[in-house]
Image (cartoon, rainbow, N blue to C red; front, side):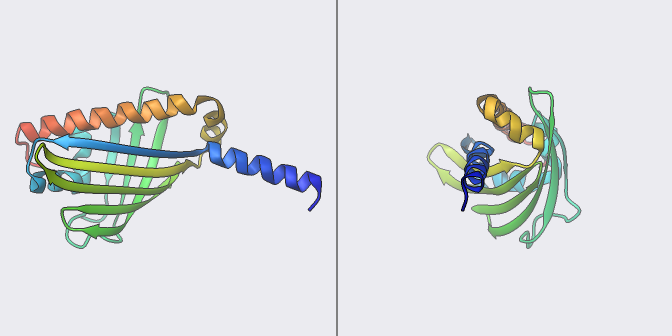
Length: 172
């Protein structure tokens, strides 16, 4: 291996690490597990309560044998861009766990674990992705903190919206 090849590969690995994001979130919802689960798998209803989510659509009706089914989302946060994300559900354990492969403007894996606790129903999200859009990959070198903060804001809006929706007893 010559020095030029080694240098190019080193730079490529360094840039690749900069476009990787790992997010861990926890929502604590004062609602029964069954209602929370129903709201989480009713993808088409997410834009009704999740500020920043412009579109959530599934050609497959999600519940009942969800593994293998797909849905598409389009997100808009405080920053001036939209994020198009497709998900294919890889694994499901009824009312407790969903694992999805993510593709589109970002790619990776999203896991959602749901459990009852003394504080209500807890939802744990784990999102491990890297950017696919060229400009996001380039700007992540400089604005990774802002992009991460934008994600945090969107998730906080989701928490508040979901709690309001469940508190109203909305049909999810």
